[in-house]
Image 1 (cartoon, rainbow, N blue to C red):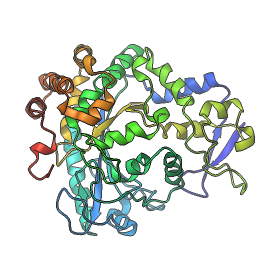
Image 2: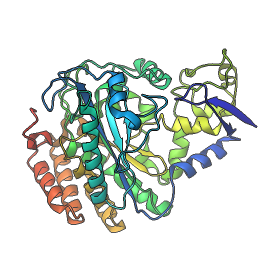
Image 3: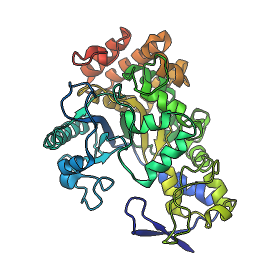
Image 4: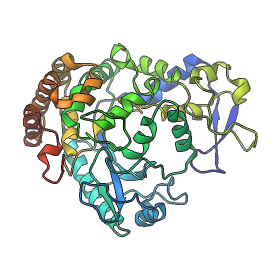
Length: 430
């Protein structure tokens, strides 16, 4: 049996997908699509920037968000279909693809490369092309991880973003702030050759997470956030957003593949896409608190009117926002966007810490004292002595196993002194 679903970003177009037969089948499917096994060989990254249109200083958002028509015009054939539905979405010369986030942030998603040095060179070249394209309409990227000047405002009107905004609004202000006023840097790496290697790499990325959050925290101010001093206001938004969706018990999973699959099915639905062209079919809203497992079991037959298909599960997986997301590879999602071109440093650090099983084991042991301290890392950052010491130790280890040792050593020395990435950039007023 199959069902017909409207394409989420191209109304009027549909996709057919087979039904899922049981929870066990759904968990097996998630494990297979989210963790592709093979010898680690590739690395990728996503860079995100706030944007302004008009005159403003290099590290300021004291200018309006760009007009969507101007943004689409500047990007031309490279524009994403979320912005220009008929766009061919051509990649930039280095292979990067452009996406636009709800508040007008712009993101480059790289092609995978065999090493961080080649990746960084391609991304730098594509970032230069992007800046030139945007400049044709007076639009500029801003290397800040949080918008300290403008109130949050959603520009994109896609049903997905409206559903997200409504869902998160019932929790607090952090959903809209995350969607519209923050920017991150993301590093993607292969999961591993076999379940044992997957578990080791997965565990390191989580155990080291708080120390790396502290090492690269550089978003102390965020317009619209409740009062308080935070090293990473961007990370604060994720921690306060929706615990069921953003904070899985990942460090307790002996088998991340099985653990992730089970967790994913028990996360409440953020939205349900429409089925076919029935004008009475539910459109995007989901029964409050209902999980994908509830839908699969038939508990939502009255509200939704159908059982989920694989396309629904694929889409549900894109609405999960843990610190490390499994998408066939592992997405490290907990890093602030870095000032200037220093975004390459965390890319090289992640590559080095995962370079060999022995380094993974050593890094895991070094990071163990601060494992789980996500809140403290976002709040205090390097002002916390234990997090500062752990961050420095991890970066020294990374420098010893990286071709970019000098770059990483400089960041390690910065951590030792308790300085943020902004403190070392003369263009930023902290």
